Image 1 (tube, one colour):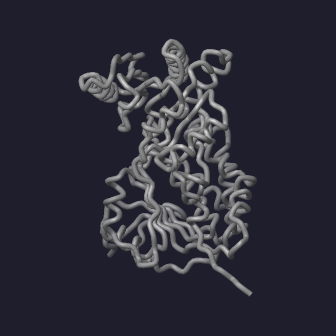
Image 2 (tube, rainbow, N blue to C red; image 1 turned 90 degrees about the horizontal axis):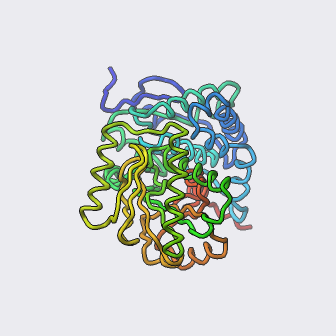
Image 3 (cartoon, rainbow, N blue to C red; image 1 turned 180 degrees about the horizontal axis):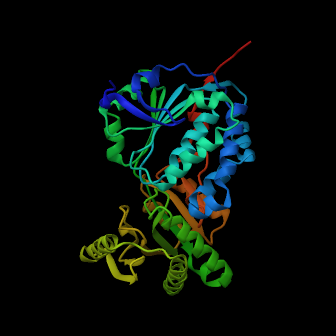
Length: 407
């Protein structure tokens, strides 16, 4: 009889309930860094994610499919360098968040591409996007090399210290995505002495727009940027770590006010056209959060465009909130010049989406920040575009070990 406390549901390849000891003790095939069998499987999986019917139903899967195209997989492997012999790290245990359904695929795919055996814990409460991913993975097994099914596992289990502890003790690398509390909770379970953690805790993000550039941009360009901003924020109810919560407007006061108002109009039209909405409970939460900022003296004004869009004018740029205020809630603040951001950035700040700035300005800002915060500077519309370097971490490098060979 199976013990529910130490049993996991193997979702991929589908195997049903399995004792965690059996999962850990299985003998799997051997993979190499950049293994062609894994590359072919991932490329085929990516092509299936790009099928029009699936991409229309779950647009975020289109970005994932694009990330898994053969040319990108090839660049990832080629970018590792040849100074040492790179080998897989071993068994990698992934614990992704429940609120961003696609993030586990990026982490798992790069780890598998580096030749690792992987166990991914998928929450039993995962949504429709995660279910579509698992279904597409099973489709992709047709014709795939048996090494894929032998070395890769996606499992589900309810909260179980026994299972998490067993997998933590057995792995060579543990990858934890989630809030600070989730990271601390997982770290209660010790790793083997040689193993290590790779953590992606609470992060916050913001957008920066040069007001004069927005006002001078053609209408078509402003529509495109507004559409990109909506993609950055509404796909995951603004809960993704890279989704901006504050928009900093850079320039003269009059320009910033005019640009902010026009920008909000454009965003509102996109939201309406796409039919984005929030339920009554979220609408109430947004009002509590925004009026709470006003009550605390942090907001000068609050404006609602229906339930789906809320704009808060901050009393000072330093009041930029890091906490989630509710889906479709954006704080706005003015800066006279881009370098003023240096004093405002915190270590938890991850992605800065931008419009109207040149490469030299952005690179100088990165140097001035000097690691204080901001790990990504990307154009508006690219906040959710995953890259092999994430949170300042080169993931393919983390998923491998270096062997020095001297003759």
